[in-house]
Each structure stands twice: as structure tokens, then as C-alpha cells.
Image (cartoon, rainbow, N blue to C red; front, side, top):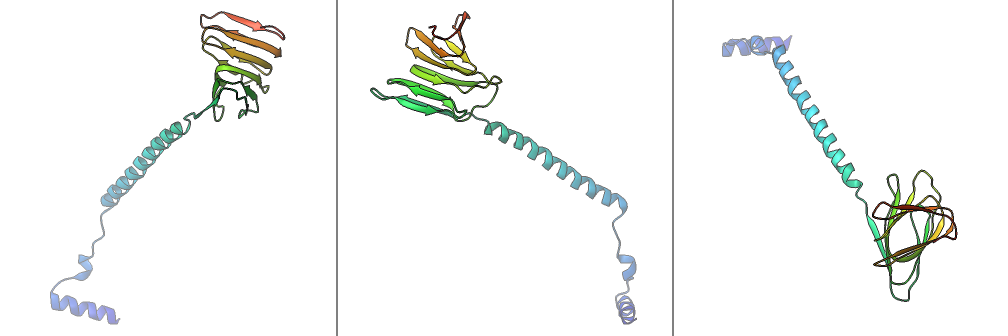
Length: 175
């Protein structure tokens, strides 16, 4: 009751009607505000989604490990899939820190003995300057020089493909 009297006294003194001056925004204004807020949310989501995908793509960058066995040195290397490589002296091998995709690939310069973990859904491939050797799970030796590559199979089976497309299937004790 006191508030009403105070309000009436102010209205009389100022010559205005305070109840009529308090105006709420019309519904169209609220609709515009809602549209702007919705636009900002949708734009933010789309930009975040696009940058998120780019970040995920960049995260799949393959990091290669390169190992070199110096003169007189022999190295025993365990690959991420459990396969084992005995790298001979004066040889280099490079392989990913983690195998991704449909194949497991390494690149060899020199000589190495391989004991490959069996995984029929992801073949193991050794690339050299003169040949590509495809393996499922086996033991074999590869010598790769500048002009020739020699592959000696101990057990299992490998498919050797030359740069010209010729291929041969090796069985144990064949070279």
C-alpha cells in the first residue's frame, strides 16, 4: 500500500505515468534475439566440428623410426606388432612407430633377418630398392644391395614382386 502511494506521489510530481512507461519488448524482438543466438550456436558447432576433423587428420601423421647398424654392429629390433628383426652391420631399416592401415610395411637397405608375427588380415611388406616382399607370418632373410636383392626363406611363404611387376612365390629353403 505504501509503495502505491509513493508511486502516485512521484507520478504527480513528475507529471508522468510510470506504469505506462514500462514496456516489454514485442514478440518479434524476442524472435529476432532467438534467431541470432541460434545462428551463433550453429556456426560455433560447425566451426568446431570442422577444426576437430582437421585435428584428427593431423593426428594420423605417421612417425617413422629409422635404425642404422654401423660397421661391425648387429641390432635386435622388436616392432610394434611383435615381429622381430635382426639388422646386420652396415644396414638401415625404417618402420612406423605404430602400424596403421591394412598392411605392416618396413623399408630395408642392407641385410636383415625377419621373424614376422602372423596376422593374415594385415600382411607384412618389406620394401627394398629392387623388390617388395609380402609376408603373412614367417622367418626369412633379405640382403638388399644396390644392384640385387636376395631373399632366403626359412619357414612359411613369401611373395616377392619386382619393380617390373613380375612376382614369385617362395617356399622354405628357396632363394
